[in-house]
Amino acid sequence: DVKVTQSSRYLVKRTGEKVFLECVQDMDHENMFWYRQDPGLGLRLIYFSYDVKMKEKGDIPEGYSVSREKKERFSLILESASTNQTSMYLCASSQQGSIQYFGAGTRLSVL
Amino acid sequence: AQSVTQLDSQVPVFEEAPVELRCNYSSSVSVYLFWYVQYPNQGLQLLLKYLSGSTLVESINGFEAEFNKSQTSFHLRKPSVHISDTAEYFCAVNSGGSNYKLTFGKGTLLTVNP
Image (cartoon, rainbow over all chains, first blue to last red; front, top):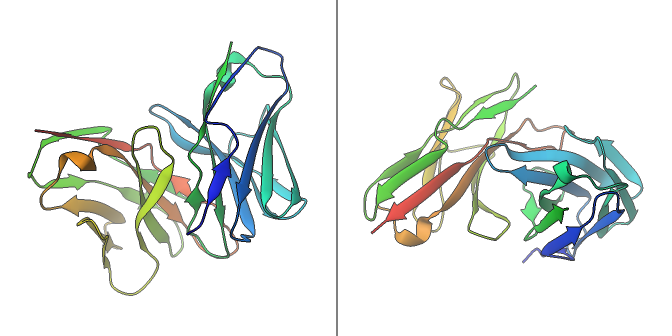
């Protein structure tokens, strides 16, 4: 089975902190994705990566950056966390094609 | 650009009743279609997919969805629901090619009551 692991289930941070959300997949997938999920808004794509060191902006990249130094790991970075970034963050990976496999999510609260 | 509309944000039903969760999409090219399910406090799991071939696709737990190109729909159905089907359901579309991105609907919360 494909396994996508997000390092934290719950995080509480303060406004202005730098926050790292980590995601690791164990299936040698080419593509990795970061979404945020908010009630009534569904999933919105923040960034995705189709290869090591390659990244593309999704629909809502403002306030976020990403890093993919190794194929299996995709990090989401909040340079200076703000209260409007309180959300559920979901990581996913896929091989060539469309089926995406998701991690369990990280619920981030920014106080 | 592609988009997905899930017409119902919440669907309450009684156990053993039939259910239909509606999904419409817009895309100018051929599509791949998906239903994902999210149980409380969990990530998304793939429920079923349409990539090509038969327009009726089924999951292992009794759900089915039918791709209707003329109506640009991919509605999810189950003839008899269980309490354990309570979850949020997301429809998603991908236009294939080199675009790996999925566009998700806003989700439908299915609540099955005893």
